[in-house]
Every structure is written in C-alpha cells, then in structure tokens.
Length: 389
Image 1 (cartoon, one colour):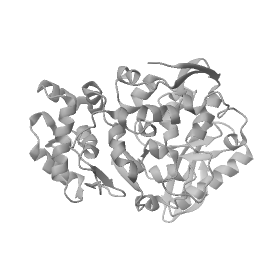
Image 2 (image 1 turned 90 degrees about the vertical axis):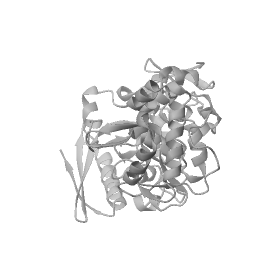
Image 3 (image 1 turned 120 degrees about the vertical axis):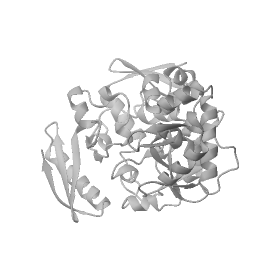
Image 4 (image 1 turned 180 degrees about the horizontal axis):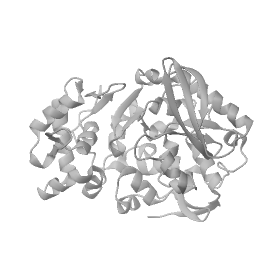
C-alpha cells in the first residue's frame, strides 16, 4: 500500500467534497438518465424511492421510478454486498470484471457462511462461484421469477452448494452465491418486479460463466476501491473493505498507487490523486454546497460511508439514522445531516414526517418544503403536509 502525502482537511470540508463528488449539488437539468457519476459505482435500488430518487437528487430529470425502470440505457443487477444496483447498460460486461473477487479469500469473505461447506469439500471459492454461475446460465434461458430459478438451480447443485432453510422449510442454494453468481452468469434483474424476475442480459459477450480472473483489468472508474475513494473519500482501507465485504489485507494489496493521504480533523484518510485534493474543491464557504437541502433516501450513497462517526459525529443519533430494520431517510442541509424523515401516504396524499435534531432557519425550512413537494411528485402524489415529531 502506497500513498503520497496530502493536506489536512476539516470535517465539513470532507463532507462538502463528497457532496460535490457525488453531484448532489447539481440542479435538475436536461440530461440523459446515464448522466450521473455515481452510476460508475452502482446506484443501490433499495426502498420505495431507491435509485430513481438518488439520481433525481443528483440532477437527473427522472419524474418517477418508472422512468428509470423503463430506460433502455440502464440495467439492474445484484453486485456489491449482494444488493441490487443500477448501472449504465453499456458498462455491464466491465462491471462484472470490476466487482469480481481478487482471490479465494476475498470471495469467501463476500459469501459469508456459504464458504464453509465449500472449504470443507475442498472446493475453491472462486470455482464454487463459477459452478453456481454456470448452472444459473443454464437455468435462465427466458425471464424467470427468482423462486422458480432457485428451485431449478437447487436441483442442479450438489451438497456443498445448498442448505436447509429454516424459514422456508426447504433445501435451496445459499443466498449470497446465488445473488453474486447471477451477474457472473450474464443475468440482470427486471426493474420494478417483486419478487424479482431474472433474465439474460441482451448482447452478453460469449464468455465462460464465473468471476473475472483480474478485477483490476476493469476500467478504472468502475473499480470499487477507486470508486469508494472518489465518492466517499477521504477513506481508509478498513472503510473500503467493510463496504465491499472484502478482507482489509486484500484492499491494501490493491490500494491505488495515486492515492493521496490527507488528515480529516486528525483522522487519516485517502483520496484519489487525480481528484486534486488540495485544490479547494471541498472548501467551506461554497454557496452551492452550504445552501443545499436534500431529502436523501435511507440507502443513498452519501449515507453508505462506513465512517459513520464522520458523517454524523453525534453517536447518539446513529441508531435513529441507521437502525437494523426500517431505515428512515436523512435530511441533508449543507454538509450536515440535521434530521431524519419518513413518508406517510394515504390515497393520493403524501405527508412528510420530520424528526429534526437541530434548529433550522426559515430558509432551510422553505427548502425542505420544496424538496418534500418534489419527493411527493416523484411518487405520483400530492404533498398534504409536513409533520414534525
């Protein structure tokens, strides 16, 4: 792991840097659905508002979730952490390379307990993922509901690849290899389906199913370690490893050579050198960042950084913002999270329930109301009011 010395930053500067890097400061404008930098990293589509609202918050003119789901230029797949992410369709073959594990140890970390029976059977984890992907490719020859795919896949897999599921009271394949193996098989998810429908990616290149042999061969902007530093930097190897479910040693071994070490209020971190960390891009006092108000979805990338104490220094607020179940959205005002929000819909009426942690100005409140109107419209509803808890 190599680094070049860089400047010191204040916490607010680091948060402003992330806002700019993620384009949260962009107003809505006429641009393509694919015109958002975070699509390089994948936009997680979890929750009612999900990826479409995350992109709308970054200036992409999406009137609703259906506009993203219907776009021929976007594709949805299970990738990092087995979560569904939207990418540019043209990037999908390269995304497979980028999100592949670096080694058996890396792959074992990413599939959790599913690695234990493979190791016991002396099956390499990468080989195991290749087997799952191979069988998934054979099963999914037309659009199929996940449950049907699982049933057919289980029939094709031997004992180390399957388990007894107590909730389902049935034997089926391990979940994480199933999810990660889907893209390795050239499969995508049909957006807007629940339960999810799996289908082959059109025009998929002829390749053997399975992880790519060299993830570092992917275009640099798609590589997860670089993307994390680009969008969630300054960050440490531990932060990145926790995000992609990879061993810290593996992340350190593939740390970008152009990484610049910085200090954020005394905490070490790294940015990409080509992000010009010392140029003032994240400096305090920028009107476009400090006048910003956004209602972030619960799984928005801005909230996905593993350095939660940097995002919200008050640890007493962490359980409220990041509960185990039922995540709320976050109210972003300038570089600070100032509270949480939850929706309530009744018929065509939409109510925003606010829990603010600090006093806010009339100007910020007016911006929250404007964002609530925009969110209601994105859901195809009309704002009926804002309730503050």
